[in-house]
Amino acid sequence: MPSTVLELVKGMVEVDGEKITAVVENKLLSSQWDEVVVMAVFGSEVEKSACRWLIWEVGQCVGVRPASINDLYMARGRKEVPLDFTVPAMNLRGMGYDMARSVFKAAKNLKVGALICELARSEMGYTDQSPVEYVAVVLAGAIREGWRGGLCVQADHFQAKALEPGKPKEGEIEAIKELTEESIKAGFYNIDIDMSTLVDLDKKSEKEQQFGNIKYSLELAKSIREVEPEGVTVSIGGEIGHIGGKNSTIEDFEAYIKGFNQGLGNLTGMSKISVATGTHHGGVVLADGSLADISVDFKVLGDISKACRSLKISGAVQHGASTLPDQFFKEFVKAEAIEVHLATGFQNIMMDHKSFPKELLEKMYRWLDEKKVDERKEDQTDEQFHYKLRKKAWGEFKKECWDIDEKAREEIREDLEKRFEFLFKELNVINTEGLAKKWIKAVEIHKTVKDFTVKQDQVEEVRGLSD
Image (cartoon, rainbow, N blue to C red):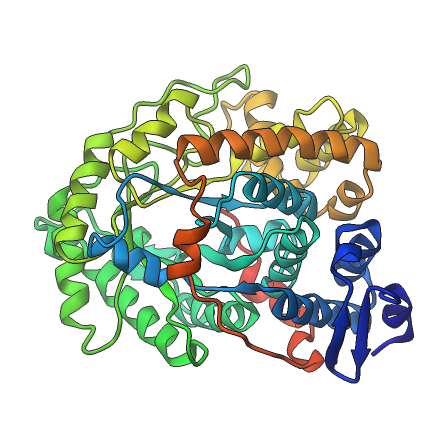
């Protein structure tokens, strides 16, 4: 254990070799803990590994452990739990620790146990957050705010790029398998397989259209079951319609799930299904940078959720929802959707916040103008281009965002917390601590510092993708 780390945790955590022997919990709620997290992200390679191990092991001690949401979802599919809540799955793209603190402060205040923190395959690249770093930051945020329970960290959109309709690009499936194994080892016990990019709408029947989706979803699901930790059943999600494309139908669902289940054998299958209902990731941006009104087909969500439960699957999942009008969120609960994915709206709160340094935002935009010009469409205004692409600046300016003045970050956290509280109430996950305690079982898993070694050579090859 590096002396720099031991000095950092002095009086807060006692370490004997690679074992935590004592934790002073009230000191975890202080700036001393914050310094451990900073070192876990920006320290030397040795310091990063040690601090990430320390965060994991402190979590094991105090009861903040990575967990799978599978049992809760399958109980929902069997109608053993109420149908009147929709689980928020929140992507923490930038200023991850500040975001995590806001999530769990709101969750603790409202007794929320059913929630997910997630990151997509593409986001891991452009936000410069490896699976092991992301888990450490999310766990640390929960510990810092005094939240306790099984913490569901999810791999969002582990998606294959298509070579042609129905066929993935060469090496895509193996790359996703490698990233999936790395993510599960890090503590991502919830994996959203997204082979919807391989749906071939030129085919006549739904069975033919979904063939590539079914084939590669099965291959990835089987690989997940081979590497999941003992005592953990990783929650697996499938996707039948590419977000922003054609709306999903019952026929799409039935073709996909029938084909998938036929090839599954005795393995545990899907816990949920993501569908397309008319939304777009980040919303549709108008020329002035504002967002266009979007129509969501809640009937699709309701009908497919009902069809899911007929097969004892929890229900349908809504993507691309964070920028929708506030009145829409209760509709997800009414449609009995099991989960809703939220990302860009939080990013907007941060980047557009009065306390986010304007000179930093302008610097990020200049970087986009120079480095991402090849991704700019001919007819895009500056406002459209910057809005759509600014998510890709988080990684390049990661340290500068973490170094924003503490007072400014506190003000940003406060507004994020208010937003999380609003969403938790609208999605009716308040007072779900008891439900989570019953169904979200957090297995105690101890690790060594070696398990947290950073693999820099994999970053660009496996994660360096953009959506």
